[in-house]
Length: 373
Ligand SMILES: *Cc1c(COP(=O)(O)O)cnc(C)c1O
Image (cartoon, rainbow, N blue to C red; front, top):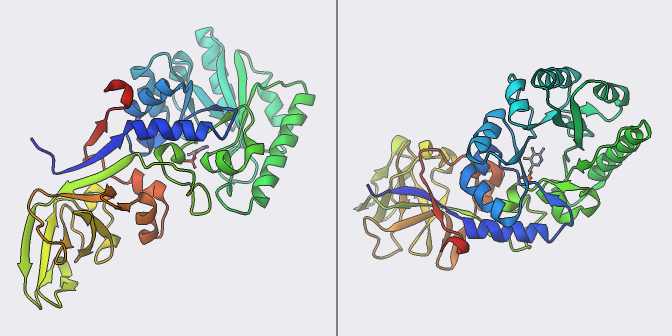
């Protein structure tokens, strides 16, 4: 069955983005592949990044970590998020590295490790100003209690920046300072932690002082700038494109209307193309009568309300549009390009939300990396 809507994932672009980001740092990179690798598909993404030399990966959920372990038993995977871990046994058995930000978690991990007669690795999460999760950077005695628990190895300690994607790094520098002060205090108290990490994509690009032993690139790997202030000009290439085929074309007369609520009324004879995707595919309904797509290398506007499975475009000035022609929702067509960053601007959000929002029902097509060809 031929697909009418799909997302193309360019694994070669992923590799190039990896190398571009690696050029910004001497530190090891731990690619962040949470949320199904930001919607790109975790297994092909990890496979490709392993070929690039990545040695460990970060996910948000235990479930994602277990999925990776099933596919790649040898992989080094860390859970960076706050997801509640109720299966400490599987964490220990699979040698998954959890983020620990409460003493009770460390105790549960320790108990499971004792039960299995193993040593469990962990990274301690520090809240230096993100205000999300983590021990406060003043909780030295609390953190030191972890060292008294049996069968644990504190492999890492990390924090996360609230503003590393802004031009003004004043607050990020304060966070970094707090993190360093804490790490020094722990060291003085006799706790040696081999891996410190803090930098996301934005900090990799513009905040080298924060790189430590390990960095955590996410969005940049997928070819998107972390923010309009950072990374727009470093040559990252979007990895995912989103396409569909025209399902129907017709001409309507002046005064006729399109879609629910009749919010579009033709002011002149108008050619309308119907595209078989809608908000159930992740095309946000807020783009009704506003967003654009590329047809034959030219921009065309969404008219009327976006429906659950269908959307209409005005193609009056684009001659020769036929059923089956490819429409680009995200990506390049000729000299034109629509990026997730541009779509995010239309929506008042960030590119992260756009790419994570492309639904599971949109099949991902993998363009082989050069090595496989
Ligand atoms: C998502 C996430 C990252 C990656 O951030 P990007 O901005 O996508 O590079 C890094 N660290 C943590 C803790 C995260 O949650």
